[in-house]
Amino acid sequence: MAIQRVQVAIIGAGPSGLLLGQLLHKAGIEALILERQTGDYVLGRIRAGILEQVTIDLVDEAGVGARMHREGLVHDGFDMLFDGQRHRVDLAGLTGGQHVMVYGQTELTRDLMEARAGAGLPTVYEARDVAVHDFDTTHPRVTYTKDGVAHEIHCDFIAGCDGFHGVCRASVPRSAITEYEKVYPFGWLGLLSDTPPVHHELIYIATPRGFSLCSQRSTTRSRYYLQVPLTDKIEEWSDEAFWQELRLRLDEEGRDRLVTGPSIEKSIAPLRSFVTEPLRFGRMFLAGDAGHIVPPTGAKGLNLAATDVKYLSSALIEHYAERSDAGIDHYSQRCLRRIWRAERFSWWFTQLMHRFPDEGPIEAKLKSAELDYLMNSANGLKTIAENYVGLPLDFGA
Image 1 (cartoon, rainbow, N blue to C red):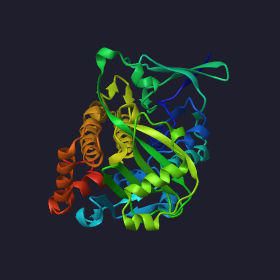
Image 2 (cartoon, rainbow, N blue to C red):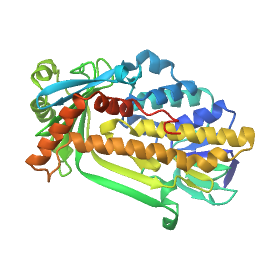
Image 3 (tube, helix red, strand yellow):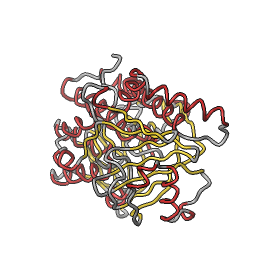
């Protein structure tokens, strides 16, 4: 068995693990990243593309923001379409100049991969049989096999950035963990196409036919979503059927401006709200999807993962630089306070914009009334805007 010693073992080479590795590297902390998939597989995952200001700042702090600033699209607002009328949420005007940026998670992952490879930092792809051991002691270990050879990593800490189905959370004794979950009775059918977006900003659409979202990855690449029943299969949705249904949910202006084309990628994603408590187990920490999932309606998933990484990297840097464990001891509490706020907003926005199977005419009228109130109330609009751009890291401190 090959034995290796590092300060931090990071499980998962998605954006959470890579961002954590980059921040630790800049602080002079040695980390090894293990990933069960290939690098191409990781890059092939189509995920979120809306970055909050806190995430933009963190990417800059990691030193990998140059391409993001060149190619990312700054958005100062978005449209909400309901009852056949559009209403703009002026993010910048309502939050003192804050905004979000459209920059695909795939592109951010690529930037982090290239930075790590350029610095000669170790990432083990296709790591098999990854297992975490003794994380409740001062001598945690990680074992895995690569090309038929068994490996063991001795480390100070383990960062579980390995997603909802990862090994880290699954390795925690059930008696030591509490999981909160809500599964929604519909999914999002997403289509990616090399077509210009229907609008220069995003459009969130509530209709009697269900929710839709008109999003984008660039000025020439669009991402669209339709609310569909969980029983739907991707094979049942031809490109033509997708575009026709989207037209039915758009307003006249949107239908006139919609440019259709063949799909590059098409998939159906279920929606769930999920939180694990706590996020620290001895010397192992959960970050990102390993600890929480939000419905994509509020664009919080990647941003929550980034703030987890901010708290965790700061705690580990404090441990090594100052010999203080204050950040480590408060990691779970700090993360969870922010996570539950984002979960609340995503849950509320999902409830408001989607049609539920058991929803009757009165619920539809009440939602229309709430949307009408929100769009005509300065305080209502500000509530949406400040949550959408992301609450400050020290909010409510």
